[in-house]
Length: 279
Length: 285
Image (cartoon, rainbow over all chains, first blue to last red; front, side, top):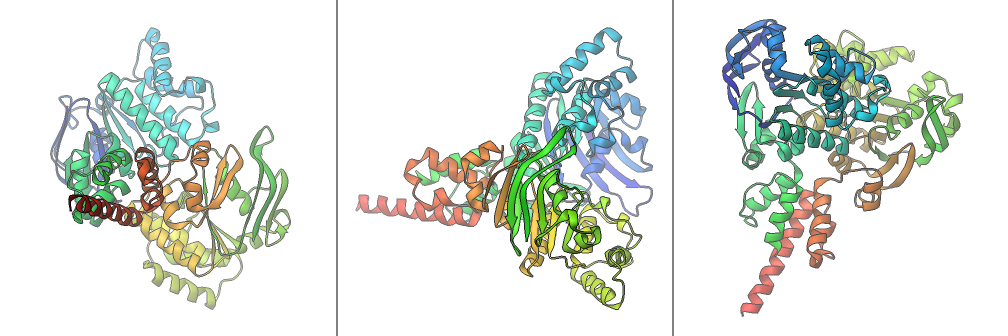
């Protein structure tokens, strides 16, 4: 369980807090999507979850962030890293080796995983991401989508209870983006891992997340099931978050009195709703 | 005019990226290149602006092969917006950044100053801001402005909306639309099919280093064979129209099955709902 209580943070060089009064409880095994306009504070929230704040970025920290009983202010960063695995927005900045296998090995060796466990964990992580065939490849020769999967596999090998990903599909085509989310959702289901994803692609978040969090000017504006959050399409647009087009369509049909159901999250739900409207 | 004639290209001789690509882009078009990661789109863009030369075949800009054009001449004819604005921003102030291209082309002077002033006003920049302290969206806009200010006849945009939020994306793309309306040829690589549908009038689809389709945007986005061959995901409303026509064959010949935008689908559904109600009323009467 992750409990963020009245959390505020002001970077040392800033005049004002970047996030303020954040209260959020994330149950074990939840798939959480966080989105918001640029500069809304969503990346700062991920830094709080993976311990980068307060351990690497100096500033004023108020409230608490507790992950599986560990208060991130009371433990060292390595302890947080044993629980929370992070994938950066720019995966190239995360790689420390040049070969896929070495990259997945690196974290395991650093964490002192017994030698006889390492081979199995490397193979499993690569298989979980569907990239066993890339094991001996030079990382720089891989496509953007393949690199993204290597970065995620190298974190999965550490068996984190919580996975935090900052825009994991920013540079991927739609089919590869969907594939990464499919893999994450399946992995989370099979291993009971909590997944927190920051993304601009709200259509993907809405499709996969159990809990959708909208951050606006450093505060949580909405935190609910995606369909409930998407009912507020006008307000979301005002704060720089665009709804999926299928959601916008059904919300407008509702406003015109042609549809009386709940907001939809994706094309499949819109299709089912429209079949009733047009029956 | 930009012409690709059976172009083959690679970064290393052993790793061919483009395998016989041919197309012609006429002046004033707005063309989107779509396809999966690794399909060869960015390589094609590098050939347009001469960063890469073909191994075989020809790339012609206004009838002249890029192999015969000097870098400065190519830069004057083709402006290039990199996917990451930090790949091209290099000055300490917004004004210096916007003047950089003029200086590089040996065109600095009062006329350049005037054009930079006009762009600063049009884009709403602060001339003295440090580019590296601007947020990602503003840096992307500055990178775009530093191309627009030089008024090249062709602008190439490699993933112009990646990493931008909805408002930033709309701001960047509205400016792109404006320069296109002024006559600039726009060539854009884009993964966001909603952006492609909203702005481009023609789509060139690439897969595994070849062109697999080249047609008006919605002809491409409604071509199921193309979508499947190139692993493309259609825009949501197009996808919805496909699925409704499949599940409700009685809609196959209606506007619901042809709707491309939210407005079109809204009008089509309203029309169908009205027709259904009219039929029900006449049956009751």
